Image (cartoon, rainbow, N blue to C red; front, side, top):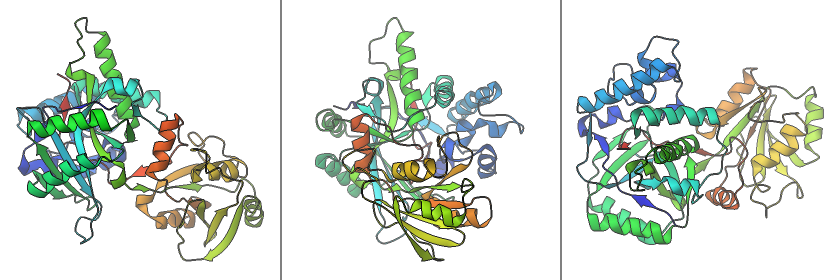
Length: 422
């Protein structure tokens, strides 16, 4: 069962919360972050990507950058831009991609600390591989700030009583922060849970009703936070297990509120094949239909769309090319990887091959068309998005998804609350 705990969060004052909350460190490169922060000294990007405050050429892994991280983080606290709560609390964080629409979909997550031992013991489950260099980069950030500056995005199997508690709070309590981010138009709302009985009940419900939590987004941050906790445990001869470093900050959403977006592929060439020969090769494993020049979006599982030479094609996987009883074999990205990217196009390693790139569905299928029409890429494949059930099935089975399978939106804003390890 899952362990969560409240914590004394550092939070921005209401007047600057919208300016301080930033997009995550890994969705912007240095120049994009520098541009986004122009005229805004409050942005948490000054802490999460502190190289923007150094001369051009500094990398996020440079020693000078880490020194700047600590300097900026301390300044945010010294200036009173981040103020610590007096009591341990849980929080509620809600997001919407269409906040101004009448039928806006909001997802409501509980902000809490997860237990590092649950990550080690696989009660917190992952579906992606992590890279040691990226783990170490995030571990350095946790070590030097002694904090989880950015949260990790978790999911859990929905529990009716937890939903009811959250619903009661958001219906009867005005959010502390409520804004629409100017960069993308996404809505963000934030509440504190102050009542101790409510906090205790939520902790109890996770301990008795939630058998596992699943990393939706933030595998490297999860690994880094848990590993730093283990380091501190090993280096503390008086370790009791109750220290704050045993826990790291998460936002935990019920699985039935989350939407996974497609993650698409673009490829530079046809591996020496002509267009006609390539389409003929596809016919061995797919029924291929020319859908014309208008954008065609996959409509169901085991259906992809392809953009090639100004036309969109529907690709329906033939029976026998997939296995709906296998948590990996059912995935459309696996079907495409095996039957097209590997067997026809000769792309063996999605992580390292420079002939392939990946485009998050948030950019729309028009981005695929643009990259092919520009001549940069030769062919594009649009995927039907995976489901939360597929993600949970894979994590439960101990398997790992192929690279670049899931894309979650909205991304969590960083800076609405921060957890320190002391």
